[in-house]
Length: 571
Image (cartoon, rainbow, N blue to C red; front, side, top):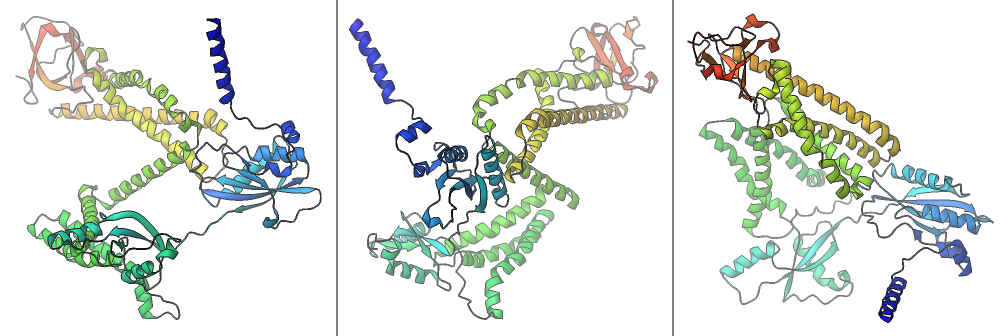
């Protein structure tokens, strides 16, 4: 047993040696290993963290004394940022270095808006070199720009129609090939030539196949063909003096689009607004435009006719359907539609801003831990808020105790969902403001924001939502009062469903306790599903007082019987 235990301990120790964590070399170890100045090149932040959120790159030139300790500190500070690369200046950089000085070049990653990226990176580097103080200074900061390759298109290699296929199968294969079903998965990026149509482009690609594929396999024209992505024909070359014809060719598609959009909008409006069967005549213009629009959308190479019609129907029919749905489902009036559009833009702004706020944040990294903690109190808080609102409606406004009315338990959740959702929406709006400030690289103190600003804003949002909700409760009670005085059945309030009834004594002539009396038997009163032995009704008679909670009448349920009211008086 002792030998077995020793073997297990030795195996565990050997495993620890093999799986030891890689730690950075210390300054003394660098000197002992003969590390020179150039050994510090390429130091950067953690490589295991995804850097796909970075939107910009900034090049910093940092100058300082030619001292190994200072340089190590500078590289350590600047390289501590995720994705930042630090190296010494080389001869190919073309930088002049004074005697006794050294230059570091930092390739820094920036996030958010491009115009503010340089200033944000410069401020971050300044803070890194300031605490602890390091004798390096920022001499230059420049945004690294890379030109986007323009004037190219993708050419896809497809399987050619077999020679022995004919008739319907060949016709079907042509459609299958045009829709991408015969693609081989080989895609080549090819520069465009102005004025070149699709057939000329494919001929040029086949002729220079070895050049475009950098010496790949030869193109077998018997087995494969080329397919271009769907798009309009490229404009001809307009070098030289501009003429009315070239100007029309350049701006013609945009002009046609601007002119056609209102026409399709009017067609959708006419189809939605008219009730006569003649309204379907508004579809004549979209139907007739399927062919021309489909031909223009797919004009970069020959395609089957039905496929062109399908593209035309997708473009024209889609726009007409959107305009039709907008007219049918949008609120009436220009003002209401403008408000709806502004609300949609506000929702979009809030969503995008929250995305910026949560990206690269402590909350997003610990969301799986925080989310259950935030959601756990909701099943207990929501019914309490619902009970509070039901109490405000029944007891504070109508004068009836909330405990005397039966309300299903799930209504206590539903009545609290609206104020909770409104509070959450306002909070997310505040968060989106921070996200936009983060996107534009505005310096915002996160500690002050989390400790002072956000709690105050959330408290303000809660108080505003409470005030608005109580006003809605008051409005609901007023609607109930107005309906009862008119002799109409009142609307319910989240499970509190009152009904107009007439009260009749079980034993006529026998006095019963009523508080406050007298018993309203000649007019309809508002009764709610009771909870307990006492029955509470709400008498709309103005003789009981000007305050609504003085109209509540209490009696024992066993002394009276209720039956539905059919008018403004009871027999």
